[in-house]
Each structure stands twice: as structure tokens, then as C-alpha cells.
Image (cartoon, rainbow, N blue to C red):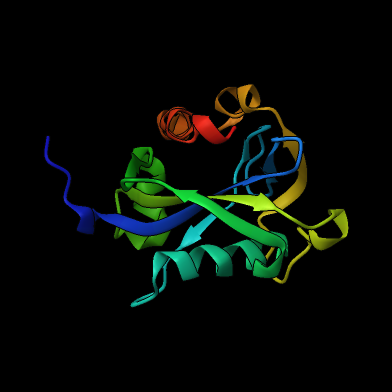
Length: 157
């Protein structure tokens, strides 16, 4: 089946590593289950994905661009489809899911540089985890992307 990129909302994801090579994850504020995820967010019209990643990182978790160093980015765009019930309500049914460009950052700051209590909070909690935590604790429809990311970024983890 051929994927039409226009059916998928443009999005960026950020894998943020601390000096222990642990990965930043946040607990979704809008989901009743114990799902955790790496920060991600939409790309504005005419915005470059690199700029969107840094903007979203600051908006979602308070980390400023001066506190991270770009290590790598995904070679391709990753796609995921939403479950049918969500795709009908999210983004007014315009998209089937999201297409994501992922960025791998080294976190150069300290815990005081992180703030999940932002103007529009997405996370109720956060923690630093080992890579084997990611796939079992993400919403099921994103598991395939997380598996691919762990393979693509394995040399840095």
C-alpha cells in the first residue's frame, strides 16, 4: 500500500540523552494509562524540521537549545497511523496519523533546565530511562517507530 504524505501530519520527535546515555521520556497527561513517550510535536507551515524540534523541545519540556547538542537525525521520515477512533477526532479528521523526522540530542544541562509544567503541558511526569524501557511503555501504535529509532540510533546509545 502506497502512503500519501499529505494524509499524515508533519511532526518531529526528539530523543534526548543524558550523560549516562539514558533517554528522556514524559508520561502523557492526556492518557489514563501508564504510557510514556519521547517529546514530539507538529511542524508549523514553512518551518524547517530542525527549527521545529528545538521549538517543540522548549515548549513541551522547557529545554532550551543552548542546553542540547545535536548528535544525529533520522535518515528518513517515519509514519504511524492512529487508531480509527482517534483519527476521526484528532486534527478534525484531516490526517490518518503523523510522519515524523527524529532528532537525537545530547542534553548538556541539569535537572533545573527541565520544566514539564509549561503553558500547555503535555506530560504529568518525566524520567530518564534505559533504552529497553521505551518500546514496552509507548502507546501500541507507536511501537514500530520506537523499534526503528533504537536501531537507527544504536551507535549513539
